[in-house]
Length: 390
Image 1: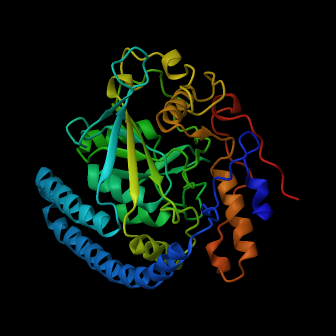
Image 2 (image 1 turned 90 degrees about the horizontal axis):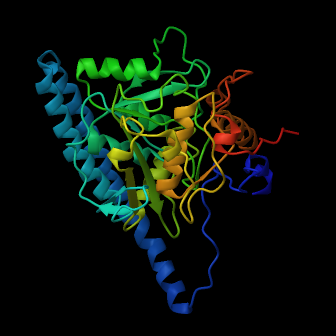
Image 3 (image 1 turned 120 degrees about the vertical axis):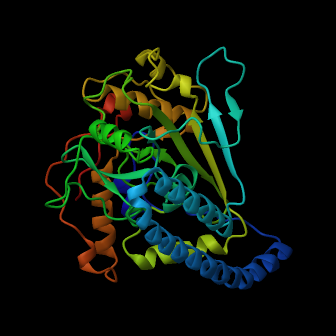
């Protein structure tokens, strides 16, 4: 849409904030009849499956609340929490059409026997206090990560470069919502590394961070918030796991970029439920190539990308060297391009979206700080500059 062209990345031409629109196709008469039949069947199946998903979600919330009585028992409470989240969230993913989630462990080093190892997802390599770094395109990412790891979710703030702990339910509602650039008054936050170490001491589980700070349409990677700027390369004090989630689709995209209220979320959830199947692909960087490996070299992380991967020379930057390494590694395992747009651009985009849609309550809009610390430098994560509003 031309009216949103100011949020099109100049270096790549990608618009990362608008929901993907399927291309128009010429259908045969038989296909048109079949499409008309689906238009009748899908709403019915969508309503039925959405009802089951709602009941399961309510049951999960009730069981989680009941489990609070086990909190003083520590490990027992953790096992109980992991069990109910693993079982119920996997069933929810099935009702949403994700019958099987493909998981690939990717190696980027040349000379290895294979570039991708297909494995069955396991939890042995991820323990309490590990840091999981992932891209962010939908609330479905949150559901999958909670099912797979039962982790501690975080919300990051670019103004203070700190994070706070949030619940699974809060992480769901933050997906696609208006980005909060600074923490609310009275809310305690910590630098990410201090937070991860604190969670390790408490045995709270692995920590998930979305360094883009907001959702995209899964076509590229936004410039990271520089939350790794004071970290070492390699960072050996914790275990870092780099992951990325991709969606394949023809008509309806499971990505969720605009979630300015419960009606947006319910509408998208209904359309997701109405699909007969959906496709999610999870890619993880081989752990021995992680920037937490003592033998990791920054030059390995910033080497030239393979054919078809995120393009453009990427250099180590002084502001956030580890962030520059991680975004390049994530771009290489996903083959996504890296953009010059960031979390602040998403807030500006939603401002404009709200202005053009008078049906959205003005209370949805939040105050945007006048200045936000830049993310990793353009040489590390894209060279485009955001056009000024006219």
